Length: 619
Ligand code: IRN
Ligand code: FE2
Image (cartoon, rainbow, N blue to C red; front, top):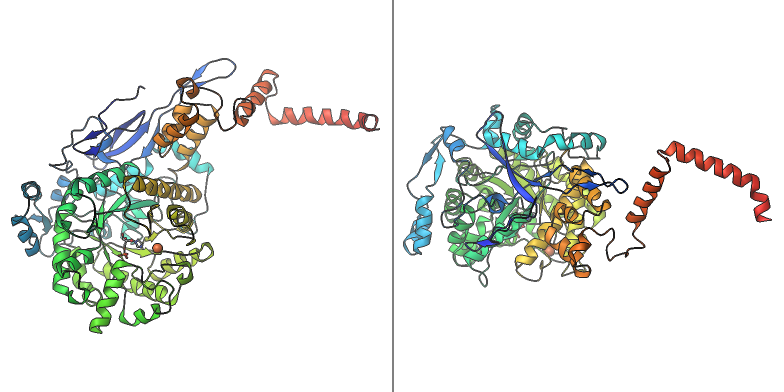
């Protein structure tokens, strides 16, 4: 198949499809109208090195988070936002009402003093809310035995194309530390995991543009990318492009951590144009509303911010409700104190008022809000360790126990909930984190920031943390919050976002392989085969970052002919082990040495001959 030439950018966002790839859409069985997006990578034929006969290689289907941006058939105008694929599913349940405007006072004030573009946007997005007394969470439906279209979408998506992989999956049963991934993920399995609280589907009814996905340790490990402007840098367009860009490279969820001006507008543009769930830390915006003075925060301001963001369509909220007053002194002797932004804000508030925070005391009120929109909790780790020296300390685990209590309250309200985790943890102390989290939080999905396994490599913290991320994902962590090379140093640019996402994708995939996820290994096998057969283009295209692979290859051998050469510049033509290995095979085939038994027999004879003659030879 020929590469398509498409304009790389349209309305300021990256649109070019991946090389030799095509978006495909698989229909549902329970819900035929659902169209699950995947990517097919087309491969060239294998040429037999002796006979020259060509054998076709089947296209490889991969999980695809890039949304319609990589589909050259789709028209996209970021002024209008993406197609609302879930709109009908939400309406058909008959439990939501459409509001004519945002109910948040703050929001309406902003509307009157803002740009026309923003107005147009908001007029198109009419917020929805549960009809009074109704609960619209996926957990609520799951507990009643209802399989939603979202659940079927996820089952199909997680399986990618089961026919390609069942055989491989059967051969490869990984060690999964108590998780139990079935050979085929059915819609009913999705429902049961959600009902059990072991998995979360973050999808606010006000984000109908999103493609359903699931977080849970019996599913593919997911990656979150943080974006967002700070008071000092970047425009709205840049942030939209950054989110499109992050999904392109494989981010499963995005968190908009914008602070500074235009938080509401930036978020509106990002949500309307995002095919993946969006998370936020609402306390950041609440703090802006009180001009950065933590002590001035109140429950009412926070509550309004939650409603404002829920009506916009934020799919999950980081809420640092586990930072209790009595835990704050436990951080006093730490090397790096409290490193969580949200955690430090809440610690300051608790100390100033000498009370438990409104996040903790109003936790049930927060549940009441979240269930009206299906916003999931991401219970924040406000006391996570910020250095190797502080890992697994008293403060950290005290907070984790409180997060466990809060999980139970959220579940009582049928509000979906997952748990944030560290941070900075050396390798030998990582497993304890996973074990304690499973125990205290009754197997709610875990979502960790790395962890960074050493503190000595600023500039390379995507790698120090990628190591910890791969380990904890194998032990059962469901979502990995990426860390970019700029961590601790500055706001990531587009290239850092790409490096961070790819690093985390490979950590997540390494864990999927180790756990024996049925959808994992077929891609590795296809890539290895392409590599052995010197199908260079296929090797690039099957990789996580085809552009970089090609670029690296072309640095030393740029000629087109080198794309079919049976060597690369790493070993040169004479020392390529794969080339020599193929020659060994060809030799064996030509001399009728067909299997190991024959080879072994040949060796035995040779060895006998050698032993008999041996004494003569070496005398
Ligand atoms: C993930 C796991 N632990 C923390 N995170 C993420 O860190 C969290 O989801 C958010 O995106 C980011 C910053 O959170 P703090 O610093 O406010 O806790
Ligand atoms: Fe850090």
